Image (cartoon, rainbow, N blue to C red; front, side, top):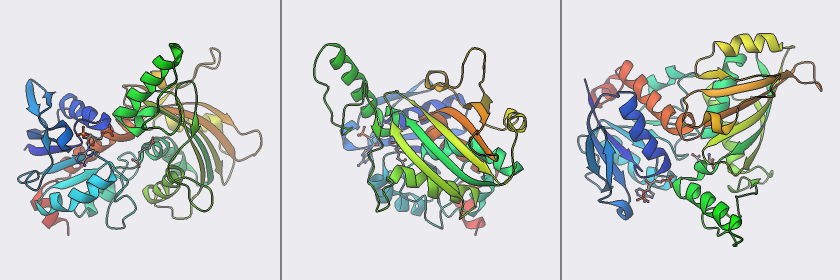
Length: 345
Ligand code: A2P
Ligand code: 11C
């Protein structure tokens, strides 16, 4: 069986990667529609041997479509998702629009694939930093409950989209030529600099990105009161995010045990060479599927604490790959298409 698929936001950083992954993972595509704004209507993109013209999304875009992979921002998702579901499609949405909606499963396939069965047309793909942390922390959590997570992120430009990646490159070029870097997407120069994530702040002083890590992780793990504190920072890296994670278990958790668990964990690749002081780096995670984890050590400040470090491709596992894995899950469980929707509730 194959499916009629639409990518909403096909010209973006994640959209482009979705196109590549549908091809390289041999997703059963019967027909592919590429949707974006009117700005890029007519742009030709390649899928396998075919060139497909991008269409401006409109009322008829979702007719006869089985699966929509949406990555065009929350506003666009809110505008079109209901219509796509109405037309009979399942929407896997990469934006923040529906993630905390109780009707909408929020899925990291390595953690909570079973949540897919209850979908009512929309499935949400978590925030990139949340996905990467969940892949690394869940296998440990399953062995022993975690009381508290303290995480600091080092987030690449790609998290803010394709134009933000271009902006970082242009800023670096400008600075090297002795010119003043221009800012358009980012509020401050990112090249040769970094700044706390610029999403809106709440009354307790946490920004939206930090609260996504808290609330989304709780929902994915199914642990409502899991204690998490996050500090999210944008760094001048092109497309892989890194995270320093401190875990406090309810009992001591040895480094040896963590290594044993993580060496077998799906989606995780251990990267540690203590002699060479070599650990996960964004350049090694870029373009790769697994979350690279390393630098696992006992927390010297707490007997039940463990420190770890990870890098993961933000565009891939942090977004497009996770979405395609969800789609593969739907295919495997026959949860895609109008008939499945009727059958699933
Ligand atoms: P477009 O190229 O026409 O602007 P990124 O996250 O890399 O910035 O990409 C965002 C994606 O979302 C792009 O494909 C962009 O298309 C698309 N997009 C942005 N706004 C809209 C909109 N109002 N309607 C449809 N697609 C949109
Ligand atoms: C970033 N993760 O790196 C953010 C942006 O909720 O999908 C993605 C926002 C989201 O800036």
